[in-house]
Image (tube, rainbow, N blue to C red; front, side, top):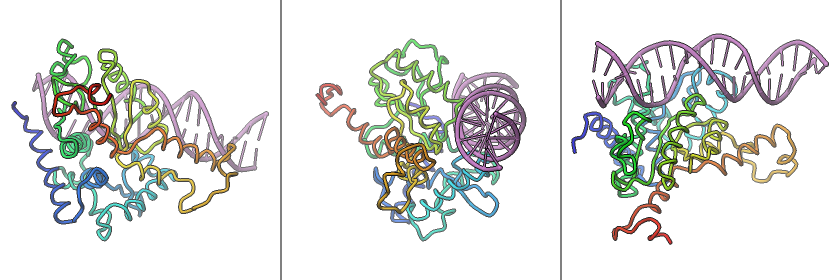
Length: 296
DNA sequence: AAGAGCATGGAAGAACATAT
DNA sequence: ATATGTTCTTCCATGCTCTT
């Protein structure tokens, strides 16, 4: 199987970043710490006025108070949770972008999007002992041999292999309503032809309404966030308060609404670490049993 | 050389929320 | 009840990378 040059470039650079992070920074790569490696490689900071905040929103919105506050809140979270906490935050993120030959102010979208796909592929390979197909051709996949090549986009990641296609992973660094329709159309395209297919998204979106649109769509089985605890921290209406009066939690006050959003995020969005255990649960065993045989 | 695909920037109006 | 402010949706567009 011929590998294309792109695969070498991204995979090689990302593996180097992951290895160096383990060796030099002493961070052990595990299902629980995978998010740190993703942020280390892919997240970047945006300078807004005097502040440096993570780019969790288009810059024009990030300048507004509400998103600036959320950005600052995430920056604080990362400062104390993204290792090594002694380093300045700006040294702890954006390594793939730095390693690429991109100019300083160059746009990052391709690097982020493709880097995200390959990062997930590396992580899945590491934890689940199975190499996902990255951007496979539609007609390589079981059940889609006769499908026209350009009918829908190529999937981001497919598991487990061409002959045994059971999980489709879409990785999107951010979501937007105007792209959502296309993505749901694709999901339903796959679902209509293969109702048994497990269709999931991995995202780093920080807007609850965008997340809910995706997570509540019937075409989508699961939505995983790169780091759910970080997302929840940004929307935690009661930070550092061990006990809360129940009066705050009911009614339609401002604080009660925020609590609702927080609860809904908790209910509808999953953490990336669950992706790995979910894949392992579906994965065929060494005896070549099907999923149904193995589980039931 | 042309095309697909990625995540983004930005504008403008709709929809919703809040203050007076 | 009205005006004002904020967020969401929609539309159009960019610059880059990789494929055809």
